[in-house]
Length: 359
Ligand code: FA5
Image (cartoon, rainbow, N blue to C red; front, side, top):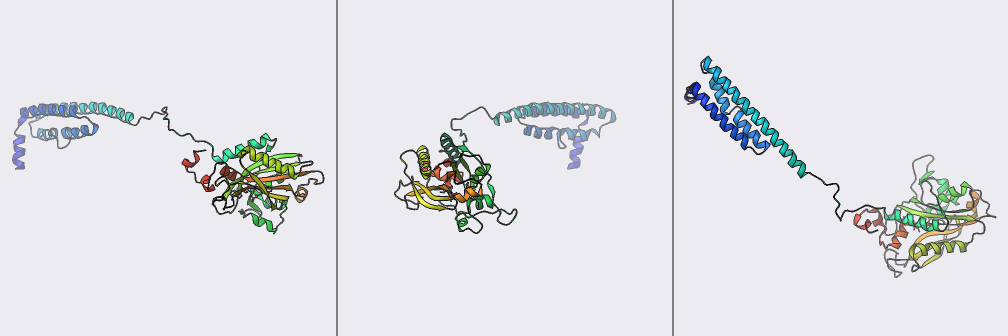
């Protein structure tokens, strides 16, 4: 059958092949013109120019013609192939330009478009609270100081009247760093070492606050997180009394929480102050009735305070016969917690945008 078929094909002769070439040219041009995508054009090109195309079949038949006829048909065949090739190239350019435009349009982003619901970030509540607390104290004539978060044992404990093995060191569960002598370098457990640095500078009198990060091996709960912030206060001048300390704390509470919040000082112990006190305010979560946040006491401790112990003055070379002073240290997260009635302090470090965007 195949032989017979090829015999039939071969018997078409020169004129038959030329006719067929014109017909193929016409049909192929129409197929190329009909293609509406690059993919469809590639398929049409394979059909009209590929190995199984009518053109290739004619090409195979040319070999069986007489040399003169072969030349004529061969030339016409090349013309048709070149013309179809060119049609495909032109059409490919048109289609791919159109497709590129369509893709650009589909992927277009208007960077100037502003939707009303677009959220803008802002400072974290703890940072805002720290800035507001600083403002309150700057308004009272204090300077803002800073100290390092990585401290030596001497600044964090010893100069604050806690020699090695002093039992009060147990009040702060400490992260030690693997640097120098064992347990000589640590992450500060409170901002009180900044008191020592300020006093060692030797510029008296001192009215300063020092806000910053503190680290303790505390288990996180409604009132504690292991990395938190304190704001330390230090006043050293002639004739400073406990009355000045109590008045300062009262002024600060009224300025920050408003007059409706009650505060109290309770006798306490810190090795670096004598006498010492704890400073508490009415729990704003339960307004004093007792809840999980205040451990059912109705009060929340904000910080510690007291008159600078003469042993601390002597560690930094200040004459305690002439100078006296007070110090305090408050938790910044606790201040934010009570001001904004945040039942669980851990919410401040969970980074839930729905919570943070409220402040
Ligand atoms: C101190 O750290 C003393 N240095 C305060 C002080 C300074 C006393 C100057 C006298 C003179 P205390 O460990 O109680 O004290 O911490 C003070 C406050 O820091 C606490 O009342 C609380 O508000 C906050 N605080 C302490 N631990 C945490 C914690 N894990 N998470 C959040 N806040 C904390």
